[in-house]
Image (cartoon, rainbow, N blue to C red; front, side):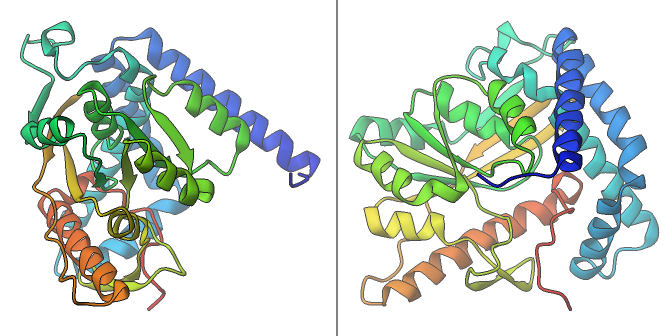
Length: 304
């Protein structure tokens, strides 16, 4: 275990305490009030953070024709969405997308729309595993919730927070019923999960410097190969899963058809790249349709 300086340790403890306090306040409210509070907090604080400049640079690079008002709208929407996500997190264990009337919106309408669930039913009927791949859109934790509540045995990959105390706080709030493995230790764990008949969930739009360069939003970007390489190794489909925020703390989850299987006559590397290109194309379409719901703060592309 790496040794941390006293200053860094104190900062990590303070951050973890602050996160725990914020989530405790959120949990004391109902999900709609918590979501609205998170929106107000991040809409006020987000533009003052250095990450705001990273997001603005990314937006200028990907959407150069967007004017200043358009960029402001997207970035304000991004902070709104991120604030809602954080304050919704402690409520996820209480939600069941298939019993919407138990957690309706204040006006009585359903909180969830789930499309494409027949793909999950087919997998379950065949006893087949799949790789479900999603992006950092809307509240991306909702996708995992839907698959778990649908009864699929799931293993999810997550990136451990740099702050280990904060990471413990986050993991303590995750809904039960699924297995979570750290990204750094995911390789063997995911292979074992598939062998046990479990499906795998990955959020596959983050930068991987050592990954192959594949076009993402029209710009070559280092792309994590895990979704494609695992699917090819285990001979299972890659299924894109899209989450949209329709309003407030209400969501639409779309389980799309599996990506086309690459030509078996091609090399493993060619087949992996074909799957990654297809997946990045799906992500790009989703992001361009709802840019304000994507997490623009990642350093996703190499420097110009």
